[in-house]
Length: 436
Image (cartoon, rainbow, N blue to C red; front, side):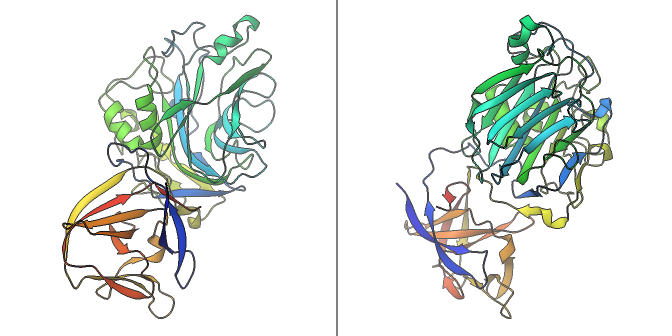
């Protein structure tokens, strides 16, 4: 059952009141994510981002070893180049090929690539190989436009071609999953596999592109909020659903819970390395093999360089924004499902007001002091404030650029609203409001 409420519309000036729909939570994550989900990069269809480095030694998705012919179920190969990738994206539904992530050395038909994209027919597609020799997965269902989605692909490192009797084995080298950003639920993407000339057995070279197949080719029109590109260790279990969920929805927590202090693998090594570490200046501690991009939410992210959060000062790990500007880094409406509750004292004279200053400077004022400007408001948030007597006030929340936030009673446009004195519990709920 849904409820309607008044919500400040921050996309017009002067502010006005619109009606939105409140969709009750069905489930929630155990705690707020460690990863900051506030910004994303907007891709117009004519721009792209790519990882600076292209050597075998720092490119997790490259393949130089064909891999073993036999790989134990649920494990990685004993010799080869296994990897995993994830991407959080929202595409606009254009009738074009919208690339999510790709490892490629060209856009021509003979160029080999590991390529995850949304096709012109709205299907999720993964291609491994060239246009003449490949394995290809196509989803059964369409990918809904204008909704944030989390996708994950891993490769166990085994041989992928080209014996006619082994095609089903080649298909099994890959797992393709979709993760609900609201609940963290991990599901296999339903679909079908196909092949040309029984797969692909050669190397995968080139660079890693996010939002593009290769430079300005098959670019996405939409937003990408985060991506992980990582090697996998040899002869280990593939990530289970709990780990996959973190890789996609909370990669910074994944680094601390699953990676720090544990084995990892450099891309060009056919053996595992020991004791992964997050180290800003030493990529050999882990940054060569694992890269995490927060698309503007990294502390040192700035146009035109997005840093890998594993080794922020390692230039070859930088994600370079091409044919873009600073305006492509945008505040976004991620639907991550979690709540944060805290207690605060509110005095009888604490008035929170949405108002203008000089007719154009719209913002949030407390006691006449500006505490948050309108462009720092995330419109897809709802909040509840309950005092010790059980009186409930519904509020909007305003996130400042430094991660702090203030709350404002709903329906206060061009006027003040005084909150009664008392102890209040604030609950911010970051998923259950969407425009209907």
